[in-house]
Image 1: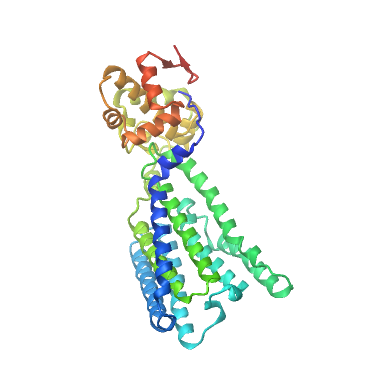
Image 2 (image 1 turned 180 degrees about the vertical axis):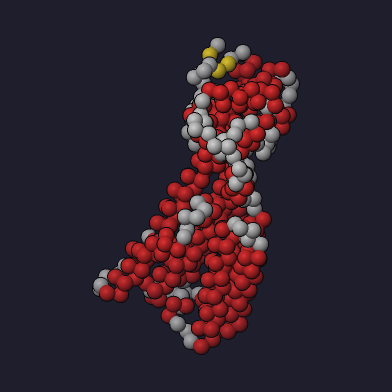
Length: 402
């Protein structure tokens, strides 16, 4: 069945990212309240006691989290990448404590007049550190030493030019994190395509988590900017506790989130039969016969490599088979089968609720079923129920016919 595309409306965005948006809203409110309360902290007490204590606490979180990630990396590169970032950040926090105890360097001061290019370059380096983790998560192996240095090269050039030429390049330096964000968006799009080629459901895929992580990084950048342009040093309290939350929360997610890349690698490492021409009608007939008998796509965790039970092909050939023979990704193909099954069940059991049908068709919830139905058929749930009641069906081109 050919799928019909539907515009990604604001309502669908809210449905997909509701929890992430609420999460960001709650954090924003807490940051505003914290910034207001920071006025109550005596500046002298903050500089001598509170700020060093917060820096030390942040360093402890970094080193402890790095140790956990290195000890339980299990061959997952993203955990080692996050550990490297934590070590670098922890070392900076300890350096900040030492500098604050011995002197008051310009880069640690706040206020518009002291927001120098050096301050902005340091902030951009930390932004680069924070973007290492999502880059490695979305595109494993891409963030090697060569690509990492190439990403830092524009920042080094801007720093050198700012030192040599008599022009203010601070706003140009401020564009560097925007470039990192643009690269990350490209990786997110490719990652989603890869997920759709390998998984039948995206409920447990990390796209949602990456959106939350990027949101936290953007809030951290906003807090840093507010700290720099303000004249209240105690507002660094807001920055420090939020950074500790981001680092601790992300470390927990890095350690306990499912890793789809590792799962697929473990499957493809098994010895598989080499074939000269894997994509042909015989494989499609075998596949469809298996689907008709066992209906494995009704399992919520149905994945591309499950096809290996009946087809002696590796992951690349299986994905190519689906894309070539059915003209869509694995994700679209499986959801099309599930929608067809939902139509059959609704016809036979018109009194069943959406939750009943969703559970029997491989969808994790009625909400996911409605969202998938809207995307794959271009119809709302009410329209779809009415079409089933009236006996409407799809032709080979995916068009609705009487």
